[in-house]
Length: 285
Ligand SMILES: NC(=O)c1ccc[n+]([C@@H]2O[C@H](COP(=O)([O-])OP(=O)(O)OC[C@H]3O[C@@H](n4cnc5c(N)ncnc54)[C@H](OP(=O)(O)O)[C@@H]3O)[C@@H](O)[C@H]2O)c1
Image (tube, rainbow, N blue to C red; front, side):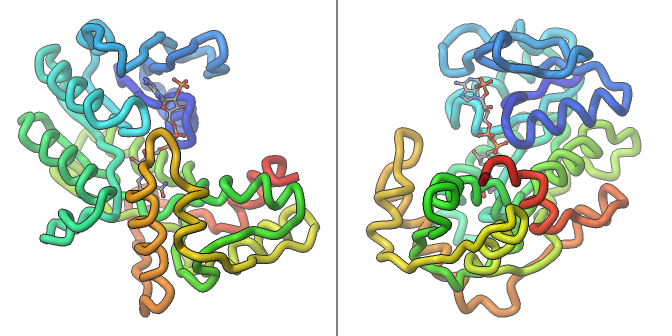
């Protein structure tokens, strides 16, 4: 039995489908089973991981856990690791971040600090582990959807910022291989996972335009205005500004790091951003 946190999320939904296709038993956690629309083969279980309820029943009988910080945050993730130890879960695959570099830079900003701390907690648990350190997610582009739908003009502080956006299905595929691994190949490994090609923000916006058959473009705004727009209940304004500045640092990063982890681990090439934009055309139309 594999327990998937964030099962209705970008990675989780794809992961549940992929694990079921591989014949695994899957327990999919969601705060609202009635709205989850998860595949019939999954055991869908209601869980608000921030509710301070005992988490152990969620993990009873499980061999492996896919742990996503998006599902309730750091405290919930820490409590789940403790519960995994108590209930005899053997393996955790942590959805971490490429911001973690195992260097002092891990203390330099919010995103790296948070994921590095979670990696330490998983390592210290004594369980088997694999860290899927995703680079920038293609799904971040969904934040542009309202602007694309309304005017086709995306406001961004760094139109020239580079990334190698990774498709959520590729992150799910890598996680699935690690969760199902019978050979130990992926145990104790941290994989930076990116998409296959470097693209600027402006190029990504243009690719979305091609996918939906409409003209799209980027208009540059200040870092402060971008941080203000990005901040929210789970992302304080200061952290948003750190992030915006970090993206700005990628304007001149040359060469931008592209990992071959998707192809190496799953055996198929990483999906392109153009493919992602086609898969999500309905979100932008
Ligand atoms: N964005 C990036 O570029 C990037 C890069 C590297 C790493 N990451 C990591 O990836 C994570 C995002 O993964 P994702 O895109 O797959 O997440 P996501 O789509 O935002 O999914 C989050 C899921 O968590 C569930 N959830 C939220 N609050 C919960 C709670 N209190 N209890 C239980 N479940 C809860 C929600 O499901 P229900 O509503 O069904 O409960 C939701 O579907 C980030 O948090 C970060 O750690 C992101």
